[in-house]
Image (spheres, rainbow over the protein chains, first blue to last red):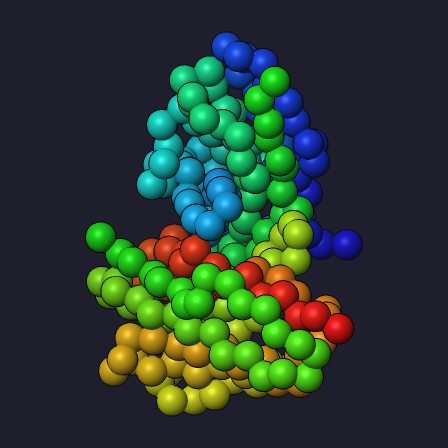
Length: 112
Length: 111
């Protein structure tokens, strides 16, 4: 079954803590993306990666970090510098040169 | 700055009604316009429109792009409760992997 797997589904962060959201894809896509979704604001791009070992900041990268050591994996770390992390986080991937992005089921992050 | 605006932000209809959703865009180097449906979790792809005036259709859903007006509409006919969702549109640019998303339209279909 090809697709994008995000884990965990729900995550709670304590103040001052870094947390990492997992995103794995078996679609053999080159590009991967992280979005944040808040009510009434659509999807905002945090980071994206077009190829292994390379990534670029999106529109709201502050307080987040990523790595792309393998084609299949693009984990997102929400650092303690992100003061308002409560949101729904979506990971997506796309094939080279194709605009259609496919999404995972998301991780809902809340602050304790 | 690239901008994608959807209207209305939300609407409530009854089963059997027809719904028309609007998406307007102001982006540099426009390539295509995409529509997604989001029910609770993962957005699922509906349509990608690149050429103006050519309608794309899938069952009760259809969409068309107007490059002169920088806009697109998504129509849903004979709505069902399963059509209740957030509908997102996004603009894709030439030579760019990124998508710029609108805020979405929340559609609620009542039985």
